[in-house]
Amino acid sequence: ERTKALLNIEDYHKKAKEKLEKMTYDFYSTGSDDQLTLIDNQAAFRRIKLRPKMLIDVSSHTKQDSTNCQTQILNSTMTIGFPCIIAPTAFHRLVDNENGELATVRAAVAHSTIMCVSTNSSTSMERVAEEHRRQIKENYPHSTSKLWYQLYVLKDRQYTQKLIKRAEKNGYSAILLTVDTSVPGNRECDVHNNFTLPDGIRAENLIDKDNNYVSKSYHIPFDPSLSWKDLDWIRSITSLPLIIKGIIHPDDARQAVRHGVQGVVVSNHGGRQLDTCLSTIDALPDVIKAVSNENRQIDVFVDGGVRRGTDILKAIALGAKAVLIGRPVLWGLAVDGTQGVYNILEILKKEFRLAMMLCGCQTIDDIRKNDLVVT
Ligand code: FNR
Image (cartoon, rainbow, N blue to C red; front, side, top):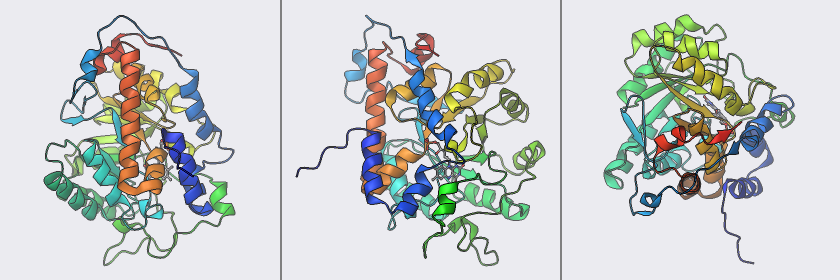
């Protein structure tokens, strides 16, 4: 029987489900408690309707090497191929045992996008950075891909500081501080499955000669005392741009601006933390409003439930600079390693371009100006 072509993210999801062991699939796919937020992240995108504009020349999209989807972020210090970034997710070697994060980073380079490398990555941040450099040098000299280091603040602040210094030393371009994980959420599927990491897979960033934080457990020693004053501490020890991930409330966005960060990610951790939390695309407009009333402008990103190019367009129309994708990357990785992640990004880019054209948008700016969404 001929294999059916995998045309969209959901096709990859189904295929990945067939391939993965139940324990691994559940770890990646499920959310906390009753999974209402997990479901609503996607449902909320579907509720938003587009109101396209016609009779606008969009032929520039059809030119070879069209750059219409290119997006500038962080005060034009970075350019990405289209407004879609690879979210930090844990343990890529669970789905691609041989290459894990190295497979993901190759696809990020090919698409000139950013890969956020998790504190919980199953390949050390040094190895990922080395592969990133090698891939640009040997295969994609024009790639504008960058790496961001996703930080969890650990109880051991000295070790936390070391992680930041390692990121600096290895050429990471920003620190992405996750703030929605004071404690891990209640993921009942993992409890049922008695989820443990298989031999040979561990949080490589957290292992060094004198520290052995993680053994069989995937719960790293998060610090529940994390607070706004720690942001000031982090800013005092690094000059890298700081982006905080896991904001839902507009008050927090305001605070973030006042604490001097360069960006926020509106995120509920893909529905894995607080269940019944507001969906991210529904949370975005108030955050955008709060930030735009401040006298310093920062980038607002959003993640959670992005599965189609139209979702990306909706997020941009509502004021986001770019989206991040978590699970879709893992499905690509599970199905076909680097090529799978490459295809996921290619599909979303194609769909996004199509949506732009059908909405009468020549440029990313047009998406914001054209008054395209009805919420
Ligand atoms: C995550 N996420 C996450 N976030 C983070 O800051 N550090 C991490 O290590 C992880 N790990 C992780 C593992 C898995 C299996 C998932 C599904 C998610 C959250 C991630 O960055 C992102 O916020 C969500 O995945 C976005 O939602 P979608 O795109 O998966 O719907």
